[in-house]
Image (cartoon, rainbow, N blue to C red; front, side):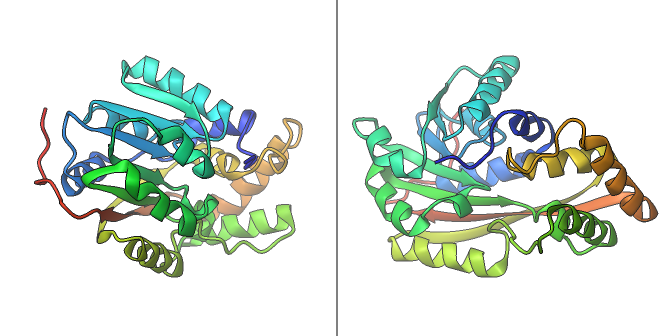
Length: 269
């Protein structure tokens, strides 16, 4: 599965994509009952934004992504942070049964800002046999896309992007209410007890962060060439300048589905 997140796009993804505040990892670990003896999998792990903080709570993590360039950044980030308990694996959602066969039962599978790229109706039931009793799946979204937020600078950014790409932008990448309800229904249908959770925070973005964040969401074919980027960046700066500073309210949503036979919600170590 080639999603187009390769080459230079992964550089922007690694540098500019939002990470996750500690409260998100705390919520996942507590609700899933993760312990220092658990192994988890982070499916669609990208460059490790959630993989690495989860790795500090458990015995080991499988970081799985279809893009080798994403995993190259993830490996470098792990080395820089001294995280040594992640096994980085090239693979997509359809590969999970083969990848997980003959491995110990997982405490959890996290899917962070990636479920909209997958076939959740097939994937979620397939994952149940690979989870320990009380284990679960967490579908996490990390705020709305920069160009779909309810503020003036986001609307101005959307105007620039729609003009540049000659299209109308409406895809919330799984953050919209309809997608969230769909994921919740699929988790329930797959036999999981679903607990929703949210973490909200507000931060301020600089114009370079905004431009880099947009680049990180382009496919390799959409990304402006090095020669085009100054013109694109100038358009963004001109359109957004009247709306500075750029405050962003981020709502991290978690749909946490657990199997029956739950362990106590404690963290060891």
